[in-house]
Amino acid sequence: FTDGGDSAKRRRFVGVLLRQLRRGKGGVWALEREAARRRRQETSMAEMLRRTPDELETPAYAVVAADRPGGWEVREYSEFSVASTRRDRAVAASGVPIQQPSLPAAGGFQALAGYVLGGRNAEEEKMAMTTPVLSSAATGQMSFVLPSKYWGEGAEPPAPLPESGVQLGRNGGGALEQSSALACLWFGGFAGGDEVARRKEQLLEAVRGDGEWDAACGDDEDAQAASILLMQYNDPFTPPWQRRNEVALPVRRLA
Image 1 (tube, rainbow, N blue to C red):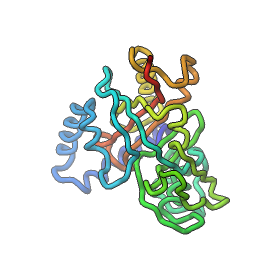
Image 2: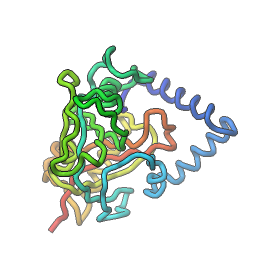
Image 3: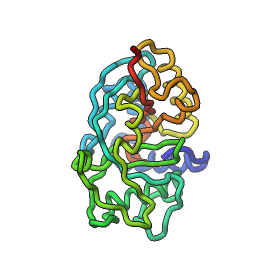
Image 4: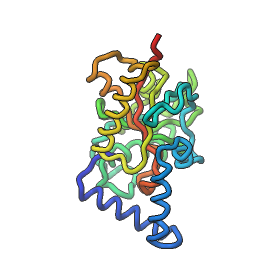
């Protein structure tokens, strides 16, 4: 989930903080020490991997250019499939229950959770949750990665219900159409609109200044910005110091 006004962000942060206080030991001081420790490690990909839920499937990739200046890397992704919908759709009274219907993109999350987790598909199949959740500001789409049994050629996921507004897609729902190589810049915290915009610009500047990689769409700056995806690896209630977020741009190796 991204964006939202200041009041929504405050409510979300307070909710996360209270949840962590109930679960943890040592009270507020222990949380503060943990948050400070995570902030010091935030530029490390090793730390980001520790923040990735290890019980959830995630698309397979190989790192082909590691530790680029500024905290980004290039990955070669294998094929994966997704279920997608409009992220700004309204929360439906008839949809699966969600804990925070007032959060930004809650309607899109509800529709995808109904298809994947709630069995609201033609086969009434309840699938396992995966990570990350992909979002495109250019298309307004939010996508859940499907389980790996549906990634291969000829695999047929359950059809979405006609009224669900959910569509299925290969090539990462378009993420891999321009290139299977993605330049990925990682960051922690909540992926609010201002922070995501800042990280996108940071990634674009890094790739434009790189002598080995270039945007797959060419030199058009508007097209480059429109090609960037946001990838979020944690549930909405994970505290900011334990979150892994990334912005990703399709790239090509320069000759």
